[in-house]
Image (cartoon, rainbow, N blue to C red; front, side, top):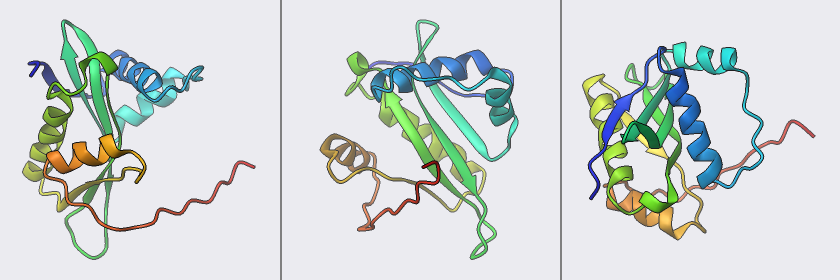
Length: 150
């Protein structure tokens, strides 16, 4: 297990957010990735319904997650959806991802969030095993999407 610093980014942490996007680009093999402009990325960090947690090792962002707060009408307590989570490939399976999950769960519990959820592709056995190992409970659902940029 590698001991890293876990940090919830604030609006003052744009450079670390950009570092995290670079981690996503590498891990998710998204090259070349056209980074949105800094003003737009800053506007995301300024929001109260967008969360970014990073894992820092030797002053560099090596992992992190992004999540969205979803206000609901069934309950006054919101939900949080983890959108992306990645750990640099050479540091995977060393407890960093589990620390990130534990950190966002702890933060959300303190804020009165009802539930944190994440989706994983059925074909991604590693992701499924990872989320199960962090205490996640799987549901049988089918995800539909509507591509609008065609």
